[in-house]
Image 1: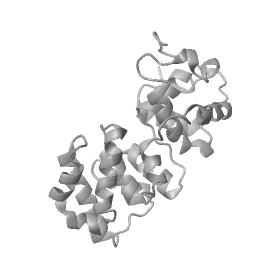
Image 2 (image 1 turned 30 degrees about the horizontal axis):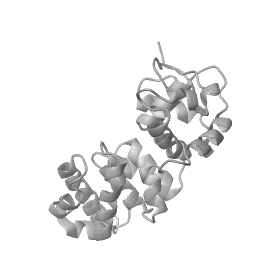
Image 3 (image 1 turned 90 degrees about the vertical axis):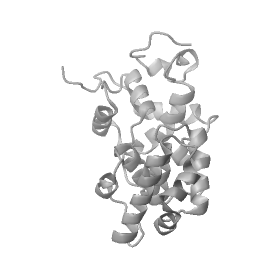
Image 4 (image 1 turned 120 degrees about the vertical axis):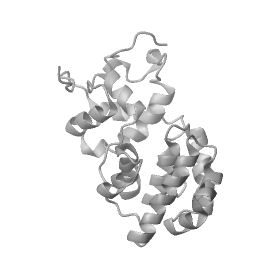
Amino acid sequence: MAEQTAKQPFDIDDAMQRLRVAVQPFPKAAMFELAAQGYCSPFEQLIACIISIRTYDEVSLPVARRLFERANTPEAMVRLTPAGINELIRDCTYHEPKSQQIWEIANRLVREYDGVLPCDEALLRSFKGVGPKCAHLALGIACGQPYISVDVHVHRVTNRWGYVQTRTPEKTLAALEQILPQRYWVEINELLVPFGKHICTGNLPKCSTCPLLSMCQQVGIENHR
């Protein structure tokens, strides 16, 4: 059976208002925190997202800052060499292939784009290892372009709500592009990452104290707090 968006009405405007309040006590999602700290160029955002893959925010944030203190432009990154990048990001997961990947991106930008990363999805997606999640985050945060970035939290939470009914993040992205108002395309990731990490968690979500409980269909939830 084809996966479809939920037919029951879900007030996304109300949900977003409740989410903004709910996540205030928690740390920001990593990429948005870096942007708030001034690391907001397309290049910095893309590289920081690569560092964050399969790595906790508590690790990826200081790693990204340490790298950018040494090199936050393609020209400076190329001069570091893959070995130098690897030494600076070695605390993150898969640091060796990531260091090579980061250097190759920087080198291509220096050679082909005068050391500037354009706000172009096709270009970002053409880099080895860069998927829609990182490309969309960089374009949304650094370029102000309307893109949805779907990670495990966005996928899990929107399906639990019953707002979408999909089995993979890729299908969640396609479904959200059809029904989510464009004004929320960037913000949905900013809010659902801390919400998913601290309230609507993978195991034992805190349903009893969740401010969205009255709106949520609790799809797939068997045990909760």
